[in-house]
Length: 351
Image (cartoon, rainbow, N blue to C red; front, side, top):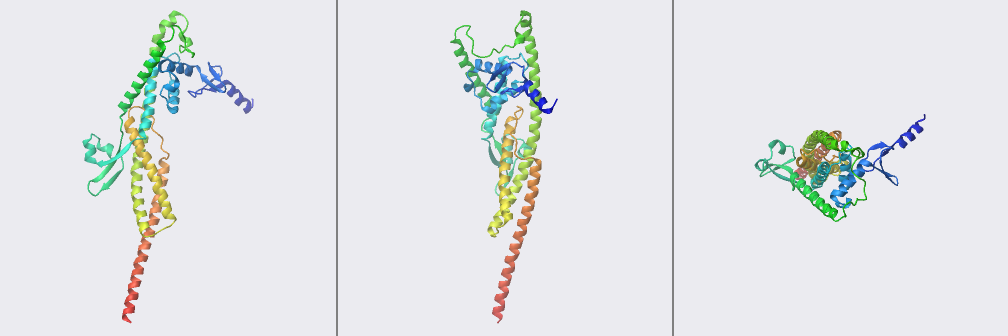
């Protein structure tokens, strides 16, 4: 069989769900609308959300949050479509999304160490953030402070979900008894059948729920480990970039005073702009990491890695070295010119 035939056969025997993005066999139950296919599991989730929270445009999702929910819901075992379990996932996904939005509002306040300690911050945590020297107060540490706490965000999301549940319930009461929604039934085929099978359903559901809870906890622990590594790198990056920013600002100010304009000056300006952008991103990540610690929420990715930071620091050292040499030459040239002028004046006086 040729490679083309193998590829064609694979495409015919598998297709991707537009919601959970899983590759499933072509024979898997679902619904095909145009060229987009949705698996039975996601259709059931859509129905469950509709029944309990109302139409999709009223459920409070962003595009990214909805995609995240369906990817996570795919981990639920077939048959475990209980609203209590799905409701918990809805709150978790919407809380994480809200925290990411709040992360853009993080503000860094530069205060002395004593003030941060008085506010209840640990010394080790404060030392991870950028610092600057104040001639009056001494070292000031810029620690990102969130306006809204994670607990408050989760409480707000829970209240919104509860309000939507009540609205959907009130709408459901107005329907005639026995009327069915124009949606897929969420009860899986395995649950239909004999009364004996129905009697065993709660036990199976309970086991599945426990298994899913363990799976979610395991994923949360993995993400927490990754978050710790990312936070440690962001702290190191912030410290290195803050140092480079101060050195570049000082040297650029001296070059401007000495009227030095060269390619190295332009390179230093570009290095300063990059350091400012990266330092801001690292600070924002540290702020979000502090707010979401313990939740397993995925931190925003930095646009630079350890290799990028290392290469940047090396290049910046070379640029600073060249500019300092140029400043030294300029200073020596000015000194020499002054001495020559003095010698010329002395010679004229002696004539």
